[in-house]
Image 1: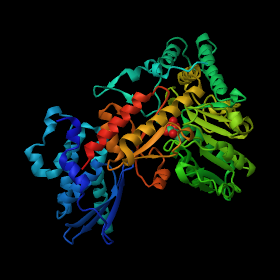
Image 2: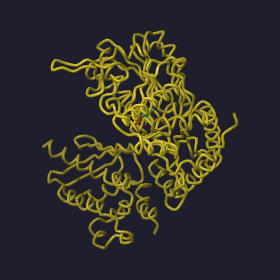
Image 3: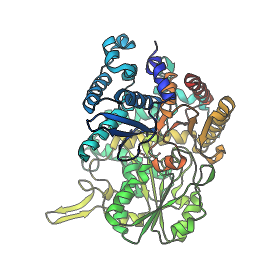
Image 4: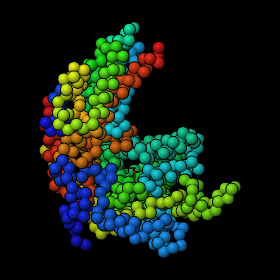
Length: 155
Length: 411
Ligand SMILES: Cc1ncc(COP(=O)(O)O)c(C=O)c1O
């Protein structure tokens, strides 16, 4: 697989073309905006928590490239219904994936363990071969992190 | 003068002989920073090897040689931009610093509540943020000349916007739209209203004849790295009467005539504005870049870029039809060789990634002009920009790569 095909896997393009959970939530849902100052990508995360700290609903707004948009879509699908703690754990795993140094051929396919843990998100691992795009892939997660902090400070 | 052979110029630029992803580099990002010819690299190499010491202070031969080289670069810049007096040429680190100098020195000394500075909606952040920083301190008003049709400024309310303003600061050419602004009209109107004019000439000085005396502006800023020179050097030209009245911008060595425990006396212009060790070898490189540009001729360069821009615009619309939008003026002679491209269904960042795999270097993003991008209703474009070393084969490579990006992302 070429680096480019590895970057733009079919599943990424699918999330880009039909983003999951796109839209807005009205207050009291929490809202956070993230910007990628390099390229102008914007992500808005709307977050609705239950009393037991479960992500009852999440919506994604904003605009950006296929990597930032598909990452946001995958992120929203992955954290919906999870507790905040579980979402934060997933964030840690995802950021870990993004900080893997170039492993050459090994990068071509996600390991079964990664697939189990990250699901569709593992498809984004090709991004690490393109360092300038890592910020695109992590933007949604950083924005989710901000939104979570907002819910905590609001309490 | 015979027409220069632009196709042969590429061989002067070592980096243009290199490959990216196994394909010849097609460099279309000169609006961000140009490449430099061997002549510039050699001049800088020679200066470091044979004529380097700090300037202005040593009495030994080498220091004198370095000072002469630095000062003769100032003379070259002055001649190149038609400055009446070479002391009006101030070396800075880039156009951003030049504009900060105008805002920080002239602006801080002359602006206050009740005053206004007029900018346009197509300014680079370098001609917005310095004014906003001084505004936060001094509390004047910033007014904006709006965008009109075809990527041009809407000047219908110009006189009202300039009424009572102290300064108009405007780009000579937009780095996003390529629009060449009507400086004659703008400067005439501003001066009639009693306002000074600062021109951000970053995108025009490298590409067309500039004569600051004929232009009639009060300040003109540009960068060396966009005109075949090295990074780390910029220029501010200003009218001597103004520069003489302005307080220093940065303080330190080189900008004083005397210092005591009680205070300092600034030196004369231009030293007053050149605190610390200046970009010495960068000035030499910029001088060599000017020699190179002059050996080709600025009018010939402008003509070449108009033809190449027209060719590329035609090829893009023939190949990609309505799925491609090029922001800015539709008439090539009214714009520079800067094409901000929207490709339907493909984000600028992805466009640039696919183009890179073809060896084609373009820039995605907001190009440091976020207010303009908001006005255009886009958050990013892919920008291809031409310079004297580009030719129709580069435009063809751009169009081929864009067609590939489109089919790659086709649903
Ligand atoms: C119109 C315009 N103004 C200002 C700048 C800032 O130039 P520099 O980054 O060299 O200071 C640029 C370059 O990016 C520009 O295109």
